[in-house]
Amino acid sequence: MQRRDSGYLAGWHYPDGIIETNCNPARSLPGARSIICTATSYFSDVVPHDPQAPSLRGAVSNYAWGQDYHRVLRRWLDELARFICSEFSGASCLPCVDTGPLVDRAAAVRAGIGWFGKSANLLTREFGSYVFLAELITTLELEPDEPLHANCGQCVECVVQCPTGAILSDGAVDARRCISDLTQAKGVIPREWRKVIGNRLWGCDTCQTVCPVNDRKAAARHDEFAPLPDVGTAVDLVAVLSMTKAQFRQWFGPTAMAWRGKATLQRNAAVALGNSQDERAVAPLSRALHDRKPVVRGHAAWALGELGGEQAQSALRALLARESDAWVRDEALEALNKCSQEGESHEPRVQ
Ligand code: B12
Ligand code: SF4
Ligand code: SF4
Image (cartoon, rainbow, N blue to C red; front, side, top):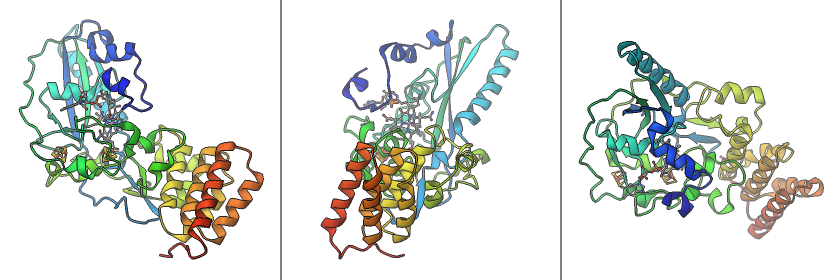
């Protein structure tokens, strides 16, 4: 409740009733006696795309490269639940994966799976932080494990290197400025954070890539979480910006990136292209000014302001001549101002 009331949970709504339920497993499964906590490694030793490099490709977080973990883990937990119910008559089980009625990290810490890193991520000795957490609440009475006696020591690498300063000194994250949230939340990305997003299309791994506990960890042995051919570690941003519904479903449908819809990814692609410093992005962004969704048009306008140049300015002027959405108009005006402040000398870099 404290976290919610501080505003740090951004748009993640936790009414009192939900918080009570998430802290009391028996509310979700009457007669609950134990929680079986699981951590599944998804780390890949494929080299990730540099999220700050000027690029026409957009970095995807390691957790989203492969098949949607909600579906994969749910399948595995269902199997485990069936096994338990067949072995112990009368037992009942409730699988929880991410969106379920538990605070995954709190449960995992109590079960001794790992410790709260200063980045708020749960760190395991065996696999570092690149683990998905999921639970099975059950009516079986099981012997509890002990919490681990481990911590981050003097290290503050993630706190110092978080691009937006989102990691607070008390071990919590201010989701309002966390790039992971900024790329997942619907709607307008506040202007102040757009540049620092770099070329990230979805999520952010910086607090994990800089973490020494993650060094030299072996890659996950689950093929399900290996980069999918249509997505991979970095996506063609121009293709995302102009994708059809069918392409969206084909490319992103099997991943954990689809849940916020096509326009959210296209918005992110526009922002990343604005940070590309590449004039080849101007033409696709100008076409995106005709997108049906204001959220895509407005972020494309911002991106053109970042790239500047004569072609970008004339596309923005043409947008202003036809646009009726007040927010999009405001973005276009800001972008034109930016172009004129930068002057004629500002020309995007050709790569
Ligand atoms: C909402 C949410 C987010 C939000 C907010 C996260 C946040 N840190 O506040 C956003 C979108 C920003 C986010 C980002 C990410 N998320 Co997320 N997220 C969730 C979700 C759905 C709910 C978490 C939540 O709000 N719980 C309520 C708050 C109160 O609890 P909490 O965030 O777990 O915080 C705990 C700690 O911060 C700790 N704590 C709080 N104060 C203090 C103080 C001290 C001193 C200490 C030691 C601890 C401590 O206690 C809290 C309660 O246990 C969970 C799934 C779930 N059902 O739990 C996944 C989950 C936490 N996310 C996960 C992942 C993978 C990520 C990302 C790595 C994804 C990415 N690459 O972009 C980033 C990591 C960002 C980060 N550094 O935390 C995994 C974490 C795995 C792990 N090893 O920890 C989870 C568990 C999903 C899963 N099922 O695997 N996430
Ligand atoms: S995910 Fe990125 S922005 Fe969020 S806390 Fe970690 S490093 Fe900071
Ligand atoms: S980078 Fe350092 S402080 Fe941050 S989670 Fe990893 S070990 Fe802990």
